[in-house]
Image (cartoon, rainbow, N blue to C red):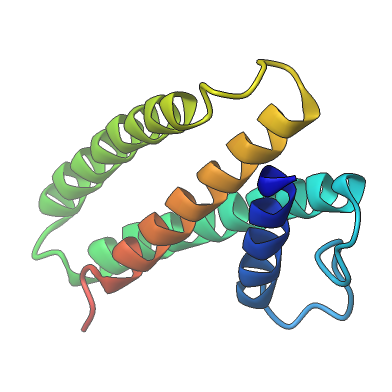
Length: 132
């Protein structure tokens, strides 16, 4: 039950960050099934926003670089850093969810919530880079 409350709370918090959607699975989370759907929705939303943040940063770098060679070098470094960050995020979330039975709905929801949180944090970081 403690896990359900935690998931519902995270769903409400993450749902508020999801944007100006008309209706989301995070509206009125009252059951475990709704909490699981909310966690999945939050992960999908966070990963979509992360991709957008990275794409926008890569574009800013191309626009601000002194030369095409510099842009190419910086973009390669950003792609490498993103790959390493993704590996760290996944390892951290695996560790963080290790108390749950792998494959269970609770495990998937906890993993989705962790990945969403970390992805949101990374999106904010990427958005702060190379600002004009």
